[in-house]
Length: 523
Image (cartoon, rainbow, N blue to C red; front, side, top):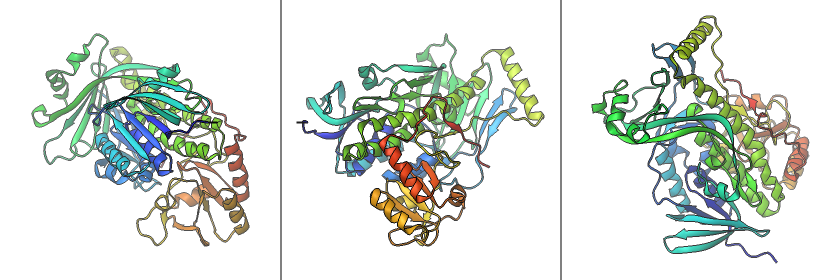
């Protein structure tokens, strides 16, 4: 007889990725134990950018508005040489994104983490241990057993499953003996966050990559009242000296009056491009920095970890309910790893432009990129990929679903009503009534919305921007996963057949490191 579990899920690490996962799983009714070695929110420089898709996902755990309140919209990204000439650039399209949020948001990570910690305190099914450390973790056919050193002493914690969200130096990953695939980038940078003078909301609107071989530098607007700089270090530079106040002020003097700012945080980071070879070992899964690390040049490190959590949470619930078999958890790596690898390669490509430290090589880079611009051939900016695995083969599958508003309900979003579950969107609620009834009987946990003629039990939505109608095209229906990745567009009957095949593990999942589709730049 299987032994009773204390918890359904043990979450190791309570940074933003672990906190999101714990909150999502508790919202789905799972009993969660979360363990974090630090007692306070991490104080050193972390992420400063979050995109519209991830902000939309954070709304499922009720913290999106807090992030927005501590954010400024990103207004562009420019690579410039030492003479101030723009080598390449990207600017967001006008207006808000299809999710209804700004395309890019320069935010304050401690505010996000504080909001997530507050949300966890409100949830009944979560027990959080701060200042606690997992010192061993083992598993058998029935579950996972971890030894946790707490302020009360060492405790034996048993759970059905466990997740390592414990960062780049993941204890869980090391305990499992999982190695990392090196994608070919390793550069030390000193990162410094500053507070701006009282009353100054922003120092600049556009993020800058200064491609100066004498000092490659990143300048990034952060949350209101803050700014970030990152300076590449040379191999012989002492890391302790690099974070000394006088050294930092000397570097910052070229950018800002150092007497007017307050140094808030600084640290030296090794920017890596790494991907765990294996994300699941039995009942234990890795996500976030424990599973992948990327240079910051696309601003997607935190975003990628949060996407992992949303991909994984509903699958844990499905396994625990008995709706799917344990190997279904392998779809997390099958779907997320190609996406992460494609983003990482894009970030590395950008990093290789800015990190040139040789004068002759930098001069040739500038000459070629400026010549291409003059000839009307701007250098291609790496695009965000779409998801390719675990979705149907159609033009909309794998893309993030635009979020419509609930008709007649003011600012109420459809996700506010559906919650974190799959969503079937109908072009016309009158059509295929029998198919919809059969679909609901087969998949009782799925919500149904309609753009026109919503019937009983369907959510009537309005799509003023037209994003969702364009995604549907001529198809009668669209099915989105709980993380709002579009599974596909087709007839209700075909979507039901293919969704069943996906849950049973018989839908083809290509899932190679090169399989993520590039996404065209929005216009």
